Length: 573
Image 1 (cartoon, rainbow, N blue to C red):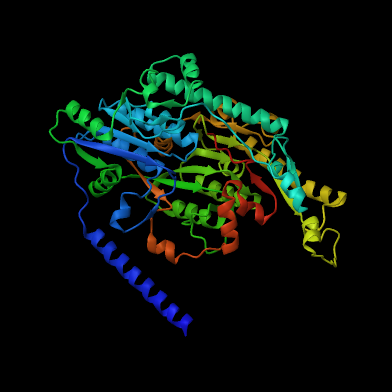
Image 2: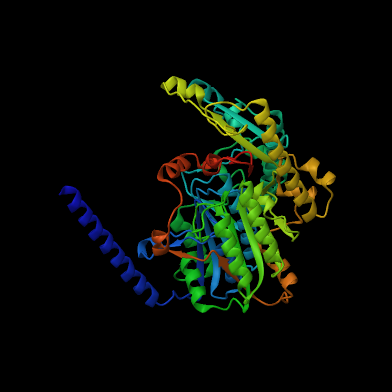
């Protein structure tokens, strides 16, 4: 009886919630878009993650201003704000940013582009780290609150290893890979970095740190050597930041706004948030009649299931992403396509299926590839259509290699008192058994597939980059490159972001450079109802495990099979 009542009450509560959401959504639909007052100051708050895909729309008033904006949203609104006579200034407030260096370089370039309009650009910082400060150095003036900390102290990179733990549990992991740098799985089989890993990551760290030093030096009018010497003394309390030339003023927020009001010669500062400004622009239209698809592939690559629509946040599935590619190809109003990739790779078959659909799309529409934070391994593979490829200097790309891993849980089963008794037909029927290691014949069989997949990967890269196999193979080997390094090695065409991608797609689509274009997002914005009604192919147990180990692409690893996956997840602090 108690369970029945609980079920009834739960159903009533859900019905009431859905009713409230419908009412709020209807009222929101009828509401007029916000108005932009003359003399407005744009407030751009950048907090946490800034995704590539459009966020879920929450029809709840007090949550609307907290909705995440995408990288393309920021790019578009700053371009419009720069020429909007109603916008007189901009204040950026970055906080606790959880994004990579590709996105950071895009956002910094967007701020610098806005600054060329001659309108004041101010950064207001609260407990900033290197990421937040990096963006702030693109502005005209930097403020920080009193009694605060500028956590600028350089960069470090750490990798975690589990071999000793797995040994204690009686778990062994066998990993085979093609490419000496394709060291995915080292976390399970080693206790420290291999020489190859150390070589690559030192190279990545040197280039990224050099880029940050150069940007700070340019923004604060110092030499790179001066910046390096200052960083070596960090972090800094607020009493030190002005004397070091890192910050212009130490003020509370109301004091900062007061000084801006005086600078603009206004009696009252007219603030408008970036979310409200975007809604106002949507109501005004005016993006131009030329429609360019902005197709985002974000996350690890898996095959998914036939019901996938491409709207899920569970990474890139070939089933769902291919449907989006076909939708774009069939839309006669779309004059060109920018495919935006932010992926460390994933399953071999899935990335190959996406590559095939990308090739079919390029036969129908002009195509440009724009890389975000990461476009490595399978994420790089799907970009090999032969069309122009753009990356940021800090994009993680390349990693042209193949890897396979298999656990041996026999020792763990022994500790738990579990035994398995196996019957087998077929020489290699137990090649994926978790109760035994691979024998030499099984290992040789596995190597056949890995080597053939690696050869196919290198061949496709060579064809797309118009090079020979012999030219590509030495710079493949599973090595991760930064965008700046990939450009030097011929793995990408140009260093640039969304501005350059739009310029190139206009050229390919024969759209005059002076004409405006409308970027049409694929997948489109999703409502809360669409998300609640969508099916998930993932089991609850796997979802919980993936949530704990998301940085290691656990969902892809658990599926098994050959992988085109970046060897590690890089987060530089």
